[in-house]
Length: 215
Figure (cartoon, rainbow, N blue to C red):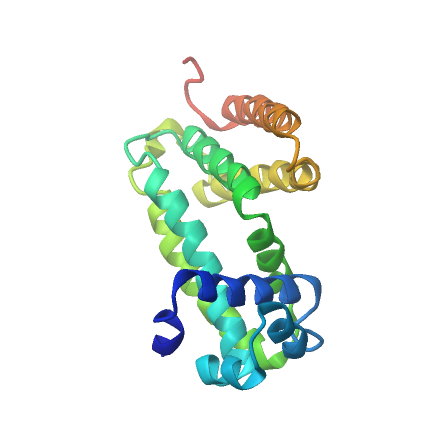
């Protein structure tokens, strides 16, 4: 669908992508300005719409672009041989937070899409999210040993609880990590602090959810 854009050399393509990501990260869909995007990318509006056809197509292209980068990065590094859900989540958490250092603008854009209310794009975002969550869920939990849980534990509630704790800790440290992107030492200290806190909470949850918490 976007073959002409994909055929651009990397420098020109990334300049347009980065200009659009910055604008949509600051403003919601309705108020984001394609005039600002083309000005920052140093192209004409006619060229932008030649590549994408509409503002909506550009926005949805960016969403697919960003989510693909993150899911590929996590999937390519995830150890699917690890049967312990807590260790699996620690891998995901570490990779997600480390990616902030490399792709912080992408994170800003993605978080903005979660709160987007424009009817022009909300339905497409929800449909894409549903498919993405289904495929991600299947991969994240592939090979997990559910026999580690107490036999009387509600598996769905247990998994939801672990996810909520993981997301809560990640979200709490995300702003601090982003404010220290230029300070490598401080960034990694915060990352270690975050993972140490996650380990503490995971050990607490293991006491409640697992049959045997030794090792």
